[in-house]
Image 1: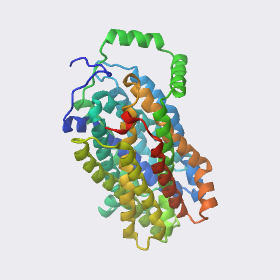
Image 2: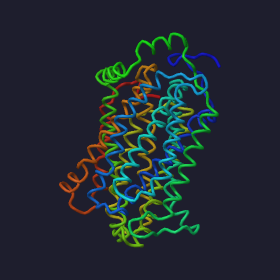
Image 3: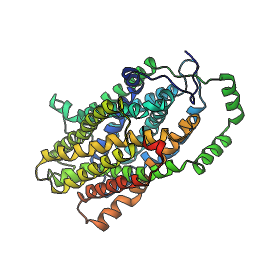
Image 4: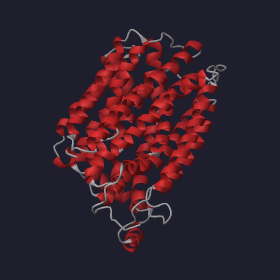
Length: 446
């Protein structure tokens, strides 16, 4: 393997090389989709009220806020002769995530489910953050948009399949009901399948993808020896926070409103839609369990549409440069309208249309901001900056969890739970318009 520095020109990779190095994201997204689609259901099954759900979710963004910058910092300074720079973190995160997915639906109390969510999100973040950096490590700037879009294509596949798992296994005869206060077997089996897929796809990427070693390995080791230590690490993380590029801060505004919207969906889609669309809001009833399965399946539609949209972008970005800024803005506006449309739905099947629009935004959220950022930052600090960039993912979720959702939707739109989806739509529209403040030409074109 030739020594190619992260800052030098890199060879263009084929579609299948990019696919292999991103395939582990299928498992990561299984974990996220099961968490996003069914954690609120688990919380409600264990007795949580609708207003308690956001605060029970707070463990997830809090762990991301802490874990991602640390993992980014550590992966920038790691080189293992067998596993490389990012792959050791893929493996550690996959093992921990898979174990947690298996035990999560067996929670017998709210505190236990919230604790498992904390462990699961921390573990997923250990795997996920270095995946973003790997795309920038391996690909030349001309292929960055293409690489992140392929990653998004795989994420869309994972979202769709994982969101439909409980409904699918129910059709195969697995029970979708359980005694009061217990999670149905269909959900337990779905989480077990998710655990198997998570570890399996990560191993596939580890076995099929090589990483470029540092150009001067001795100098790399010496620099890390001189800067090692907890205090030095903390100092460097905070130094990079204060010195983050202007384009990163502007993208942070876009990310704030984008992820506030999606956290609102993950927290409230199940209680809002089971109540508003299916008239089955009582978690103690069989009708609720059936409706919750259907909501999960409809949510899978945004994964499917994001996959189709990403596939379209794969063909475009493989041949042409794009204006990332305007593409992202239009995609987010479409998603915002998708959320707003849920208020006027008269038939359940119409949720497919809403989630198709949301999937367009989701595909763009998972690719365009990272492509813009990776073209405008120091490649030697790709891991730490990707980790710090995720602050703009977790901070809005923390704001949402500690009262941002409950206070805002009731203040502006009224008490009905479905108004949380209106709030999500407005937030996504603001995210789209915020793209207008991005003017860095290197970030915009690619």
